[in-house]
Structures are given as structure tokens and as C-alpha cells.
Image 1: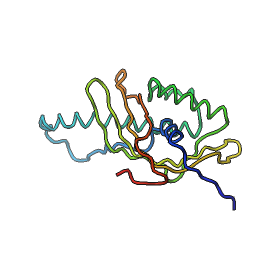
Image 2: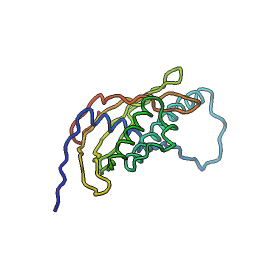
Image 3: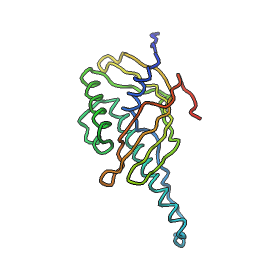
Image 4: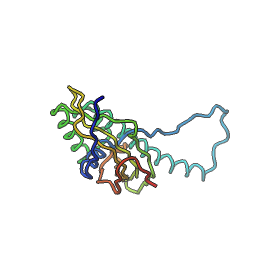
Length: 190
């Protein structure tokens, strides 16, 4: 039975994967209520709802970005039109460059059973800026697309704080810095 050698990525490699892979699994709970409508909520509840709504928009934008990047890492397409709908500036340019490099080398990323992320917090600031702090478990493997052979891989857990900007009414990922914390394998961020 063949074995696969897994190595732990360096901080730079993990940061690159995290920067490239920053948009995946969180879903917003926007469940409906089958009960008949009640009286409108009091003003204080509306203010709370507005704040929560903006935080939910930011989290949804981050989630959409992560889902897009995960999809594109598995099938690299630097010309995918969704990139400009989810990222801006250097993040958009780096993502396209990384996807082009993967595609040109005949490589892709394959994610395993531990790949996940969990939003730890959302902060919205005045002036159309926000951050999302997330815990990431990255077990991605770089593979040769033609053969399926594993070129490199490993599992690491990290915390990253991603910046988003409000651009023309949409929250776009604008900064994906190096992880604040990295631990080999699957670990807790708490």
C-alpha cells in the first residue's frame, strides 16, 4: 500500500495557502420563522439588528471569499470573474498570480478531512473597514494534476486576521497577513 509523505509547511507556505485559501465553510444562519408576523421590534432592537446585520454582511463576504478560493485552488483559474467580486488590491493580484502559477505548473491543492475554519470574531470600524479573525486548520496538499501525485503537504492550525473594505457597496478582502499563531497538526485556537 503506497504511503504519502506529509510535511508541515513553513510559516511562509502556510501564509501563502491561507492568503490564497481564505474563504470557505461558514454559513450564515438566516433561518426563517413560520410564525405570523408580530408587531415591529422596538427601536433598540432595530439598532442591534443593524449592527448585527453589518457584521453578518462582513462574515458572509469573508465566507464567500473562502469558498471561492477553495474552489479555485482545486481547479486553478486566474481569470475567474468572481475574484474581482471578492478581493481587491494586492490580495486580488496575489491570488491571480498564485492561481496562474499553480495552473502553469500543472498543480492544484487537494484538501483533506481536517481542512476547516472558524470565525472567532468580526469587527466593523467607521469608514467602511472591517476585520475577521479566524482559526484555520489547513491540511492542503499540493498535487500534480495529471498524475495525482502529492508534491507537498502537511497539517497546521493558525489564527489570521483578515481585513475587508467596503467598495461600491460590497465587502472585499483587502489584506491577508501572516498568521498570528501556527501550531503543527490540528490544534485549538482557544
